[in-house]
Length: 228
Image 1: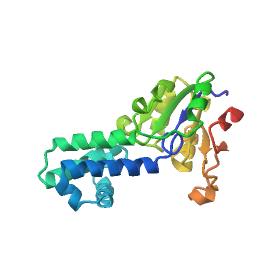
Image 2: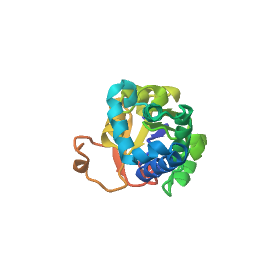
Image 3: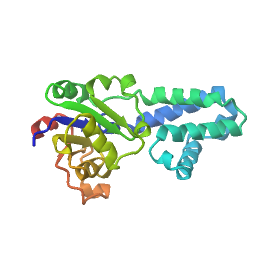
Image 4: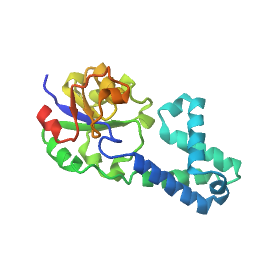
């Protein structure tokens, strides 16, 4: 069955994410130093990160809604230090703005421009990047994010929902992602073809998911055309 659509993971597939998150957390902490100095003096970026990690266990929603997780953590901290609760919303806006200042991999735009003339495009992500702010929204006919959809990869529901939104069978859809378990295996589980975006030239055993067998492994998006 021929491929009619290509869906993408976002973080570490279309852009590197680690440096983006680090910069966003630094930007947020610097903002807090001005607007909530008491908190900034008593909490480092690392201590806030540990607080957020501990909070995940308190609510099943936090497993897939990373926006709500961070917002709740900030709300709690602002409350503990007697700060205006509206600051939590402002803090999230600061973080989100920095979070969306991603640096796309060089080939992303050229490949999307060419690929959209051949197949439908879409995305599925566990993060809360704003594709409109980043400038990629016009390329995608469907974009599902875990925090708004209600579950995260590898849950099969988010994959099948994307296929349904495109009015395609899973067998007609290719999914491209950097995580062998969350992206490749999860997509294959519902009948999609799974492409492993392996920009770092890892071996499957390096990822602890050596049992996963991608339909194809690529190191840049240009190689999708060869597979198609």
